[in-house]
Image (cartoon, rainbow, N blue to C red; front, side):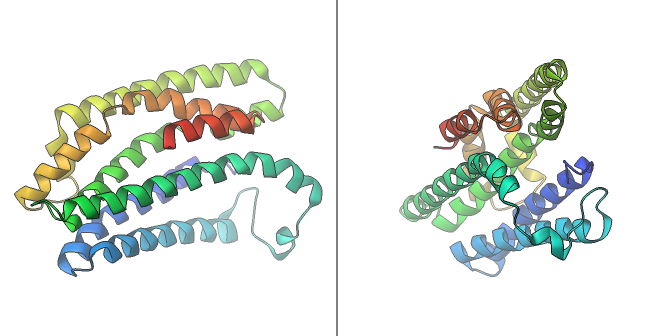
Amino acid sequence: SRTDGSPALSMYALLVGAVLNTILDPIYIFVFHWGVSGAAVATITSQIISAVVLVVYFLKKGKNMRLRRKTFRLDREICVRALPLGISSGITQVASTILQVVMNNSLVYYGNQTTVGGDVALSAMGIVNKISMILISICIGSQPILGFNKGANQPKRVRKTYLLAISAATVVSILGWLACQIFPGQILSLFGTQDIEFTQFAIKCLKIYMLGIFTAGFQVVSTSYFQSTGQPLKASVLSMLRQL
């Protein structure tokens, strides 16, 4: 939807999924007592709703692109051009999945051996992940603009967009980092109030996990730049360095 000229919709769809996941995590884990399964169901539910929002857009309201039966036919030339660029995003998702699997299992295993509890640790980290996702998502809005100007053979615009995006993303990530280190309790309270044990653990998670987030703006925008300008190998390496 960003490429189709609707960046606001892309942002809203992402935020709907992130916020809904954050709300459902503690409900499924603590209220329904579903544990790890509840966290998984919350994630799947939020992702499905985000996907439905975007599918409806491309079926009904797409400005330049609409989903039609003929658009599902594979074009060899397009596939050859798109595959190397798609691999970069694919590697990012695989790396993110590996990170999530390792982290979730570690949270449950070590959490159950302490007074915190695995379910509490998993729910707290789920909220922290969503806060991180919101900050990082702000940094990727330049990708369609970079790609458009690269395709239009406008190197000056590409350079100007990249530098502007780097500056804005760095400011946002630094402000986000400061907020997470100085006001962790206030940020977490936006997602609901839990018991004191949960809150203390979540604050600790937020401060540690977001310790290096001030570098994310430069890194994420640079990854988008390499991907948008047809340099998938560099984008993949840079993405893996952050994820793994």
